[in-house]
Length: 99
Image (spheres, helix red, strand yellow):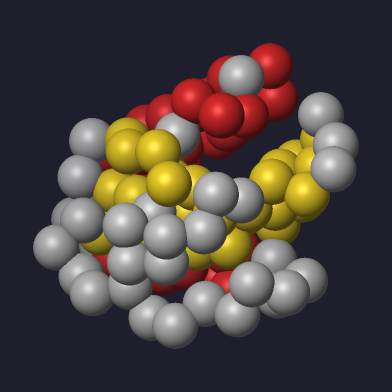
């Protein structure tokens, strides 16, 4: 499987990393590395994450990394990263066909 990011996915991760980097570049880098490593694991085990309860669509799943939700969609042989969000935030409406 390959991994593809939506613009929203990229922007959300960058926003989180920038926020943390204001206090600690080190921890911001560690978080980014951990999230990217988690996505690498998904290449071999795309069903590892649970179905996102808010959407209840089998192809929209999430992997939890520390306090963050990595929301992704499985489409054929591709994992599409839709959003990275802090677990305490309410998820925005994510169109299922977002590219």
